[in-house]
Length: 260
Length: 147
Image (tube, rainbow over all chains, first blue to last red):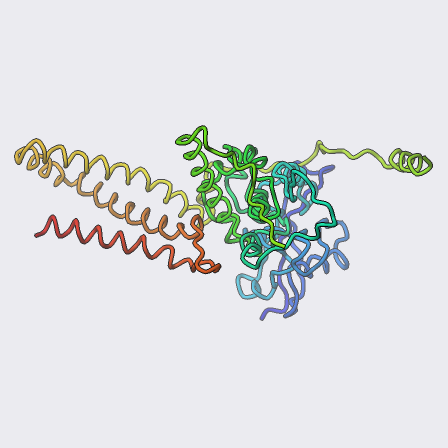
């Protein structure tokens, strides 16, 4: 293993630059160092102006997502030693398709607005009194949505999805997967409310099933699967409303069932 | 009341949040984005394969029409299909149709979730019936043509 490795880091200062440029830094390679450790080393010892987001350092907070050698990665889970024998260079850039605020920091307000639109919370038409106790779920009911609930909003899937880059109005993989997370929750009654936004060209029908979102997801959420499953459901719902216009329910009842 | 006043005072002391920063750098997506990564190229080829699938369907319809018109019309079509250009196009179409079928069959488990006794069936068990039906239908067609 090489003793040193070169990090080529995208730098962008909104006050001075018109476009990002690369700056190289040489850092030592330790067996247990991840890319984020190298960035922290540079920030602490070489160049304090380097700007990036990070928090938990353990793949939970989802804030340290960056492009590492062209791949969207959580830098806290990407070992530097992996690249030590591959040209000894690591190129670190901000997540693709997002506006850049400074250096490796991306602007997320568009993502946050889209996320809010899918209502990623439990929607209840009428809250039950506390005296009735908690909502219980069977392991099978939990299994229905558990995979989608693992999303940490790291937005790596947005950086992997070409549709996000080409069509800025597309809701995007994480928001759609989170919508499915709540649609499939037995306690939720908001499926019909979400459908107006999801079964839309900007929603699920904007997805062309490239599948890269699922491949890069560090939490194995499978957003592509969530979207295709919803496409299938939306198509069935449309067929039902077409064949049985009077008897068709708009799904307002959701999937809520009482298990207590 | 005092709490409300305190909240208002705190809200007034916080500088207003600037939602739209004027100096963001907005990266441009190249029209050749699909050449940048192997997976993107594979996706574009999968999308492009639809054109060849459509071409194969048109060819099948032409063959059926010629068959209906009689042996002479069918022989004429067969003759035309033996030209180097037609042979090259049908060969390319064949590979794209196979590529299209395999890639879509492999993607079916993502769209179809089948649960058996509460457990999600493994992906290969969802994809396998597609391949099985494909093989059976192909064998049937081959038997009808070659018998």
